[in-house]
Image (cartoon, rainbow, N blue to C red):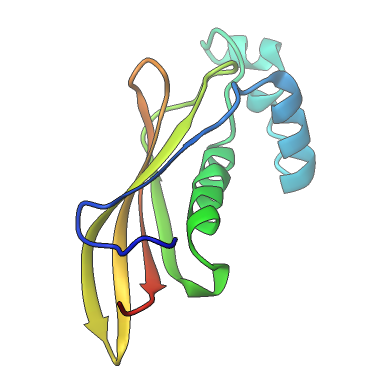
Amino acid sequence: MTAALTPGTEIGPLAVDPISRTTLALFAGASGDHNPIHLDIDVAKSGGLDDVFAHGMLSMAYLGRLLTDNFEVEKLRSYQVRFAAITPVYGKPTCRGMVRSIREDDGRRLATLDLTVTLDDGTTTLIGEAVVEVDCD
């Protein structure tokens, strides 16, 4: 990220294409998570759902992309999320971050970021936090 960071600085947004069944199948293959709740509509319906839904880790990966699009990967110090809601098939996630605080630690400048993934209908599916080392201005 080239602009100087201060508390309140927005990171993103990163708008993702709607989640397709192909996306789910490709992510299942890449991640090794072949849980049928994400792939098989009959299994989803037997569990009381209308359809399959995205892997939570897929949305976490999109948030990771937001981070690496804006910061060098070697500057990432921590990254965590809490899953808040499912992302339905055809849902359109948007990833955002905001600088909560900046502190000095052992000569390094660390920014704590609040992270979210939301859908077009306003549903928040992931809430997270990352700490990144940023250049001194």
